Image (cartoon, rainbow, N blue to C red; front, side, top):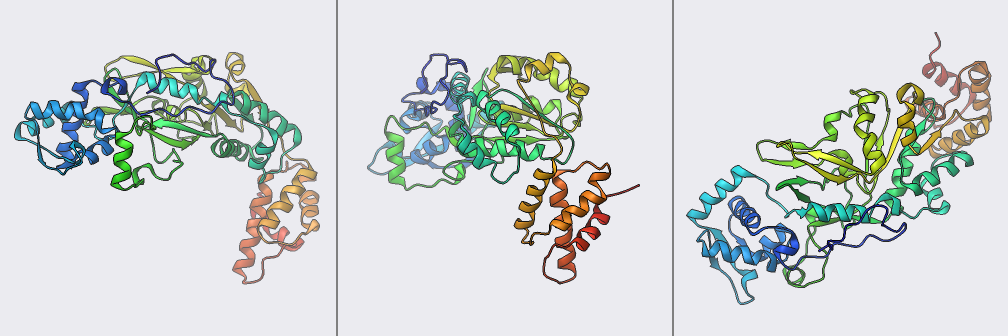
Length: 449
């Protein structure tokens, strides 16, 4: 169990490896009451039927000795009974509900229908989130260059991105469309995901007696594969469930998460999602992104106005924590510990005021590429598509379009060359690159009115 010492993002030493949560030895260390565990066990047996003590402990992600107190209590209360077992002890007993137990379980389901791994206390989640904050990531030029190896960017831009990642503060990436803002932001996410180390997220945590689920298979990439499909033989499981000092299985070891959202983002997506029928909550996107990257693409084109979104986050960006509200109206504090990246085609001054720009520590402008950079991007994409070099194709684009007022875009290289590839495939001829094919592709792609 994590200690009771309060940790903040300021306390945590940059570059330190996050400490894994250790399995509790008792209900008290698990941060759970006997009444809460009794109800969770009743709901589980009601849903799944007869279960071995071993399987029950594994399903609840707790050592058997932690749930044993509840099992004894429920047996004494005649809510469960033992229908069999073998010589290796209570861990092998078969537990099932009695008629009284079924009635109690039905009452428990009405109060809360959550069934799954036992939650961790809010205090433990807060402390662990600060222990693995993005400000603790070690970042140097060599591994960062590897994450950007598939992109062609100026040295000055690379030099601006590195310190932004090291600081763990918010980043505003802006510039004209089609020049790689999203690609750069995603490359930062790939670096954090691949080289940022591993962190732990709980399946769920308990706040104000309410359960909030955090682990999300669609977002969190587990290190050992799908957490729901990890298999081990019974002997290994027994050793893990009976031993002390092992990692708390209520936590999932993952790579640093990367959450990407765009125009679909609404203010409601930044609040707890309440399941009124089941009476428990799902954590919002930015909480699932804790320890990783939260990319807001196409900022300024959301269903809510930029001002509304920024007013929602102006204090969390400053204080590194947020407040979530339960359906009862009670609020509780959670870490706001992710690298926030705003990416936009619009002028930042048209979107936000000076007060908010001050809170966004790093502003990175991505301009239209010069011809040297454009030619490098063009050559890289052509090579990827299996096309031979053809300088005449680039010459044509500059003569016909870019030297006559159209701003070159990095994305033009990919779009035009993929059109040429499609033309060649349609005509059942080898994929090649010529000036004539570029003329044809450009007439199809570049609209002139």
